[in-house]
Length: 204
Image 1 (cartoon, rainbow, N blue to C red):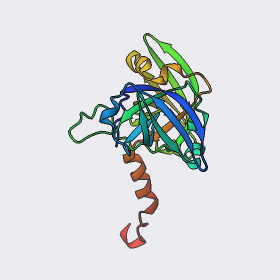
Image 2 (image 1 turned 30 degrees about the vertical axis):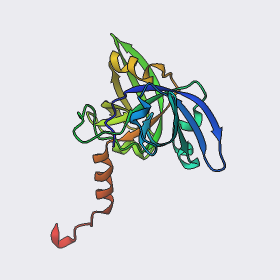
Image 3 (image 1 turned 180 degrees about the horizontal axis):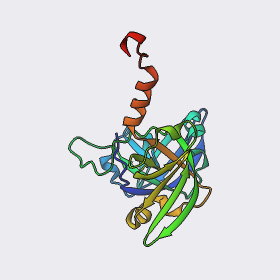
């Protein structure tokens, strides 16, 4: 589990194709002595497992399905990546509960400076857009954010200067693709509504 609070910006050190997967080596400022093999780390919103580590870097392997359903297929050497280590019991919940399971890929439609902040409009894939609500939480590239407004499949965000500078969001451009994870409560509520038995005539 994660909270959507980015604690480091990593850099893609190398990319290598394996028999079934793609291997990424990520440079990081994390203390690697405190990260065990098998640890989970969020990479721009995608939970991946550490399979090897060295001096100032660690490696993860990504399946073809994950590449197809996230922005990771577009990663290139030298690219910057939002990183967050898994939350521990007792940690401060600064954002919201984030699973690290990307629900879909959105497209940045506009970026408008407003004072020191930036307003973004992002188009969400259908039918995921139904699960995004004004004042609700959403993770964009692994960053916990509050939805300002929703109009059909487009939602708006306000990014404060600190978040803009301390994450990779500041590098977004119109047309950029972003990993989206909707609020976990919305996911389970939608599932409950889909499976709830219909009341009989006598119950109405």
